[in-house]
Length: 155
Ligand SMILES: [Mg+2]
Image (cartoon, rainbow, N blue to C red):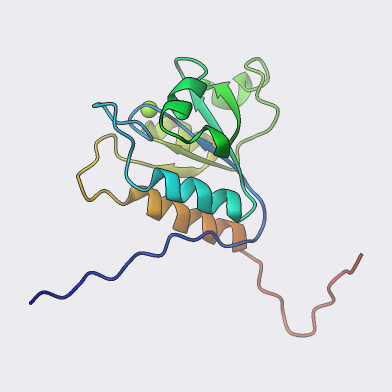
């Protein structure tokens, strides 16, 4: 008899709504064309928690790839990703905001905006997108703890 592994909870936590930017190649779609584990559940959880999901790629607009993998309904918009001078090039590429959280297998993008540097290879039990969700949950609720007696504005 073996102990059953505890089920990982895939749930977003509602807090500060974030603009979350996912890379495609070797982040969501692996070298063999397969979707990384938990992508659908994590996208659903992020949307459910009030975050906005964008998908960008250095090689173009990837709507078709997201459609093919059943993720397009969760994605608000698609952009071309700057491969260098990341901040400076946002405007020229038509990206109307600064990403709050990026998920990318290229460290340079994560260093530029903050987020999660995901390995470009995935084992069969890969759970990195669950860790991404956990990191976003944490960021969304950071500093969200109200001090006792704190005055909270009501509008
Ligand atoms: Mg990539």
